[in-house]
Image (cartoon, rainbow, N blue to C red; front, top):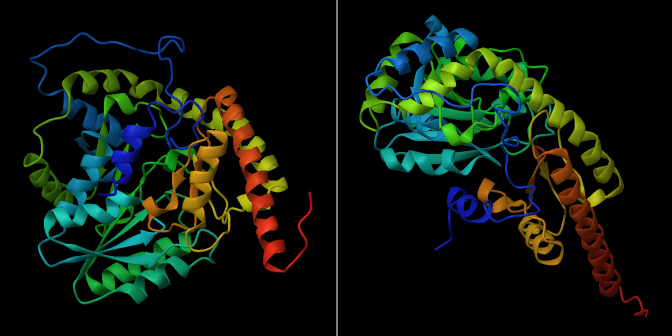
Length: 374
């Protein structure tokens, strides 16, 4: 049985020495940064999640100033979808898109229908694709901002068009904003503040590098957030109190961690752009503003999967095959490793891209009947 993306990542990322597969920014050394790195455990502090909810809600200007704190974005997405789906319902999901968004609705007896999110498409194309995919059973649309896997931001024209579509068809829009803060151009905030059609999810895992703490959240207007809370009660009572307490201590320092992320990406992105410029097989559509890039290396409808396997087998560099995003023609490359580690992995990808192109050229020459050279 083919493993899911999450199962693949748990098995493969831990042992990868040359990795462009982990979408999270490199884990920070909190103590070295002079930030809180430990807290005293108080087993009686059951109100800690409430205090953290207020602090996170204030930071991101959530509706009513409150959020629902969850055990990471995975639980947040489950809670958000569980609050709007029922058996027989349908949810629209992006392709290429994050696989758990595609698989999770089945847990609630719902179905998924894909709609195309082309990272290089004109503004408004995403909302048009969603509109074309609608059926009478559709109850929700799931989008990512920044897009996973391409790192491209939602265009404001699409945001408004999705809102109008949701109003016209009585839909919820679940916006996974886990990568939003990787983009320096994005102000702190949330799409949930736009109105009652929106349910936003996020976490400290990807942009802030705090995945080990497993703290995420849901943001929505009061009525929707109450429904999310009811679903959450059926999944887990409260997130880890140890994680909650440490994150609460870190909230005043999240701008420091966000600035660190922007510095890492500012160091890595020019190196990536230079390799991409000289290796046409690493063409990427759209302007990534996050930790991820979507690459279409050619080679047919499964070229991305083939290139990922080739790069790992021949050059030892790990990337996420496109099949996990519903599109095996592409492959996801990530930019969030520490610059020294990123440079080593990128050098291997550079060589892999050169070899891949040479192999394609040789295949084309053979197909055209060119004489073999030695």
